Image 1 (cartoon, one colour):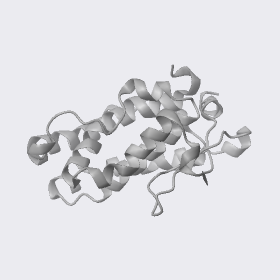
Image 2: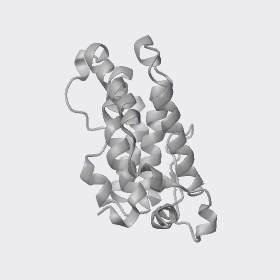
Image 3: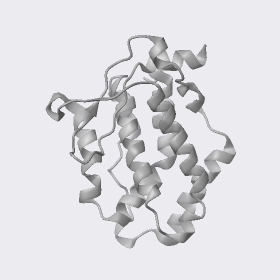
Image 4: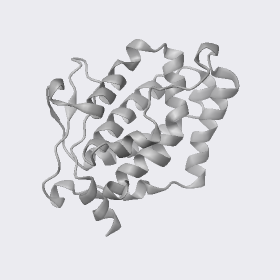
Length: 196
């Protein structure tokens, strides 16, 4: 089925880089479909207009009145669309998990009332996505130096972002990345080998 196919194609153990020790967690492929029981990534190949509108509203409200002047312009915190394609299939969910973890961490810490009022549903959606990603695999810690190439650089960039960017600019980067996270990165991971 499409649902099972999504799990088989992804074949991944997920990880997050936002740990107290700074350790990077890395994934290994799932060895069998039963281990991925409850993995339903195929549902994220598309979202309803209502769901997308809820995320668009966050961006609109932020851009209209809350965007810090020194953060205007393009951000290079998150990879450009082609970057995820250049990763191996098993590496993509690792990147997405780190991206999603940072996104949730930043949005859950938002204190601006104008945003807090409209974040409930998007946060619920993002947590659901995270739970489904985690249902598709198990994580285990691995020493950072074993990671190489784009994956290692990208995870390191995400890990260091809260230290290098101001809270306002980090918030801006996360909010402006929401649509791509949903309509590109997540769709690519859910499509497995078909995302090429």
